[in-house]
Image (tube, rainbow, N blue to C red; front, side):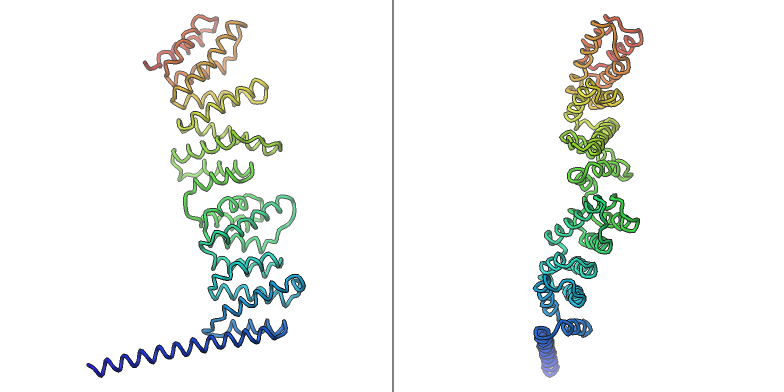
Length: 397
């Protein structure tokens, strides 16, 4: 028993010695490569990096890191030199394969210093491997992709290889902050391959899809806000609450926007009107205050002939779906205005009148009693008086 223990201890010690010797050997080999790299020509530096990549079991992260620094130091003078470009790409791939997390900052500096797609693709590949959980890495790539989307919209052609690698890196990193910019890429009008890649990247991001769409509506362009809302509205996995929250967010966002650009203004107004229709469909009472603000906005615009009658009626119907006393008070005042017009001019718009009466009937709030009752004493047609009586019968006491 004792002899077996001694034998096992000796074997373990021998193993540790072997590991230490191998470690020292690997370190010595790396140092040798680094020394040769420092004193060699550019062509030889490239050969050294290529040779190092073929060595089994080598730990050459520091060598690749040294090569990155060399590329950065010489970027201004030699950044168009084919050998230096290849060296930068090999070094970028090397630190990624070596798992050298501390290299993320020099990697991004190389990305910004060199504009050729081979180097940038290599950098992005390594950043996707090293930058998981690093918010700055994700933000850098997000910002670059956002800039490329803007470049494309301005009519300039982006570097599609780098663009593709950028989207792939964000898909691998999987950070929720990338959703708005990936969504923008998906609908930017890129070639089908890039658009599909962006779509797949969006699916790879885990988290609250509804929240991500709301982020798009908050941060992206007017057209993209509208596209995000429609994507959520048509999402079959969203329940009534999710649709209501999405529509509420859309209405809140659009009520504070007044774009000067006609195209953006049209998209914002379309989004606002579509959000109101969705709130009506879902009877999302949590949005009552927003629905009231929207009503007054449309009421004013309709008076100035800046909004259609259809949209004014939709605003009325939205209040009728809110199930709140506040909504009933607003509609009762509107009916009071219509009654005054009828009393004064003997004319009224029947479409708007019927919409208000029906909405008050749906709400069933007794605050509307006097206004509905007064209809019976005015020179309205019989069908209007009948609608008012029906609404009166639906009031809750």
